[in-house]
Length: 129
Image (cartoon, rainbow, N blue to C red; front, top):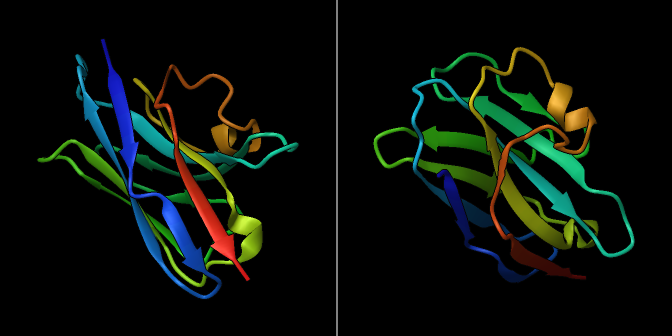
């Protein structure tokens, strides 16, 4: 059973940085796609970034492109999201998710992650102005 555990959330001032981590375990296939998503109170879940375990293209939502960077350490089975130039509107619960398939487009970003098989419980990010 795949398990995803996020960490690294917290409270920072606008303009600051945070790095989120997502420790993954239980994969039975070598090819998988992982991503970061977030949900603010009263809003729909938003896709932020996708990455494939075997490399290839990275996909970013326009709202975070240039500020957030997704990366994957396959040796540690850990997904990261480096977040810079944070804004109050980045305040949300952040989730990592995975699917045992290859992501060839930003399909899951536009769908808010619907269809991703596995989800962590989230880590809260709060940005103050």
